[in-house]
Image 1 (cartoon, rainbow, N blue to C red):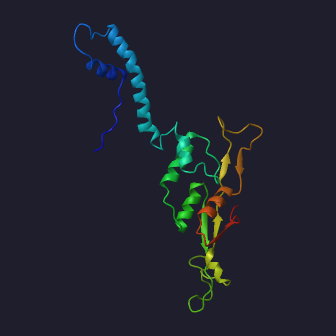
Image 2: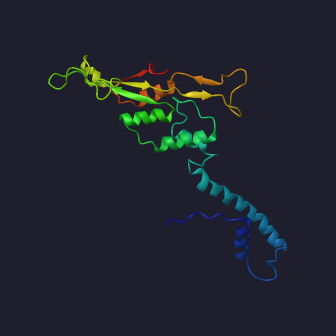
Image 3: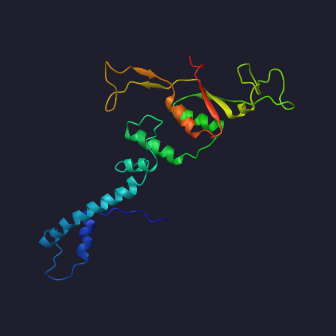
Length: 220
């Protein structure tokens, strides 16, 4: 097992310096001796340095806990994301950092649905397949219900590179009090807007050969 860092206190450093002094009447070890008081004063500096080093090792090196070096972490990982509204609280910023660091990416439908959910949206995704003689079928090719999508569609073969994200819920931004919150009499109690952040993120991460469109018609 790797050795864990041990914080050293002021008394630890004082004792370490005293242990390295010569012995004899000129080097008293009594707590009230002037020599020990001098060592105690010197030890306070090293205890402070030790504590700051421990903070860097135990707190600032962990993106889940960092505070003083949060700006540095964000700069290293390309945050704040230009597509997403900048996080207000330290906790939100840490969460965004950890999510960026742990994201494995992907190009599947479940992956993009998860991306939308992470931004606060519920969506469905429709892909298209052009009608192909000898492979496609005529008639009702919907998989399950009358509300599901058709399996094949007449049109250009480029349909296979098209897909649509259908939003089934809005993200609501409620009025907040406190630092960074809203202003009474100016800001609305709740704001419902277009999913501009979702559109920006999806267009950046979509497969390069595809074109994506966004459908808001299912919103009530």
